[in-house]
Length: 404
Image 1 (tube, helix red, strand yellow):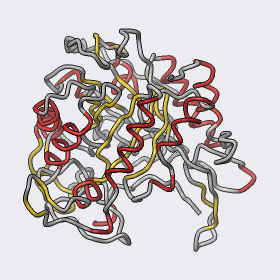
Image 2 (image 1 turned 120 degrees about the horizontal axis):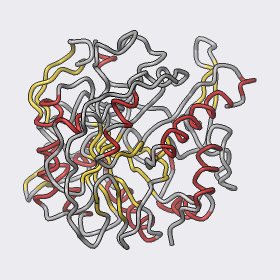
Image 3 (image 1 turned 90 degrees about the vertical axis):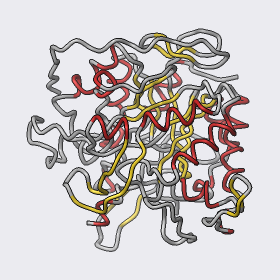
Image 4 (image 1 turned 180 degrees about the vertical axis):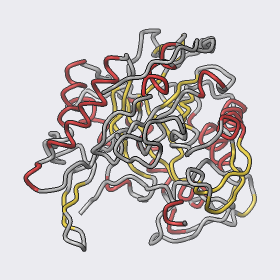
């Protein structure tokens, strides 16, 4: 059984009112023209110069070497049936770095034979999806802290507070060099930084693995500006999609301990207007998981997402819900949460990519509790949506966003 579930922040293993702010947004980053996707003001332009609105799905190679069996061949039904124009590929630093016998001509101390072939699976998605003129967003989703990669297929890679200084720059140098010439590829430096200050988010430094609660192991993190610079140093001019942070705003009603309203993902992109990444073709990403997947919009969503999107391009490139607690729910509560996020995105002219492309499954856990995953598909033969995937399917089809 394939169970599509988000990688919970590893620190946990170790240790519709809208508020509109009155501050003026920061100046937008000027566009730089190239043969690929570009940014103009708060708008993404495709290679023809037309406005591009992302409508896509996530595929998961962050903890599974084979991506739960999903391959680049899925670009066909994504485009022809679902009318999606984007696929976000969640990539593991462990598998990517560990799959190489040598790096820069020297023996790789992290080489793991079990990881061999991983890069070719990512190549498969890039080749087949970009051939259909889909935007392929390569994400750094899971990583290590100290530059040491365990050679195991039993213990899954983890997601941490922020990208690591030890290996993330090497990862991005390789990825940008490998795919930078493809205009239909974009790069996402790190998934969902957690409770960082603006300076930590931008410039890195020492952080802890449980930054939201002040505990965990201490490690040296790479900042978004450094990772952006590493990508650009390869000559790549592709879009760089920079994730916001999990909110640590103590003025948020009920605070960060209220899972009913405070999203677990990195939804706060307000740093884009206060301490932006300096450069060109920069997009910012919000991940508004609604509380514990059954929650509601936080009261500061406009301050953290809506207002920044007026001056910088913002996409919601990961969201989903597992809000199903009994079989009779039949996916309807989760579907309503997918629909809520899509409605917000469309009303604010924001692109989106839903979590996750795969067959929907439900099961009873060891305690007898009923659980379901984030799968958007009801069938891998007809490619029709699950109940919770239907709002995703219907919105994409309604907008007719097809590749070629």
